Amino acid sequence: MNITAPSMEVGLEALQRETFDYFLHEANPVSGLVVYKSAETWPATMAATGLALACYPIGVERGFMSRSATVARTLSTLRFF
Image (tube, rainbow, N blue to C red):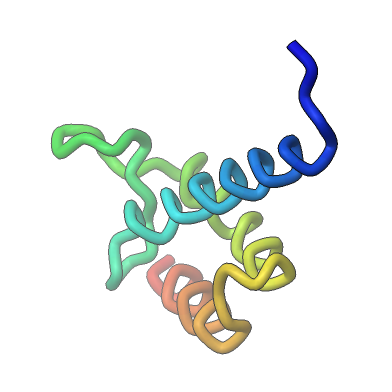
């Protein structure tokens, strides 16, 4: 299998975006807590929430989310605790 650099970049970009979107879609809009797996019966965990908080600034740098939306989301999560 010969993967060219441009196709690898496209694939990595898609993977980064899909991973980031998981944290956006699986976060509770009020508490900011993130579900461990994308299934209705799975609980939110501190590990997933912590990873989301680390992911948000990277999403800003990659252009996946605005800085102001990231600040609002992060503050609502931190204020929940």
